[in-house]
Length: 128
Image 1 (spheres, rainbow, N blue to C red):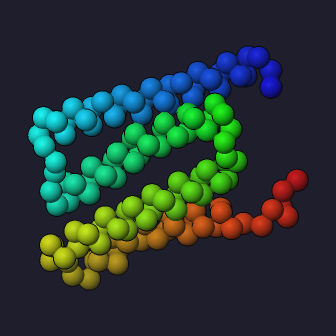
Image 2: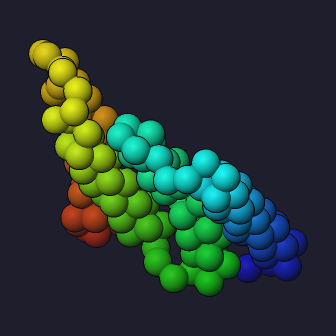
């Protein structure tokens, strides 16, 4: 890898890690100030912490140290976040009266799960 390209990669990885750490500090400060949330707000906190803290930090670490291939990294993240999404909905579903629109709430999670599984299980014969 050329030296200039490596500097750009290191800069992007560092920014991603700092972005995740910044949101981690904001998240901890918010929880310390207002206490733990309940209901749908707790589910929203889990979703946002996964997207704004864990994803940028793991992206930066993977970019720096090349721990996983990008297909495996993306497939794991899409599958993992879709499971967090679906479990979050299932945990608050009994508290709210929902009618015919319930399957619509699960469609984004199921779509992400299918995409993640396709990335993880895709055959490598199409690689050039």
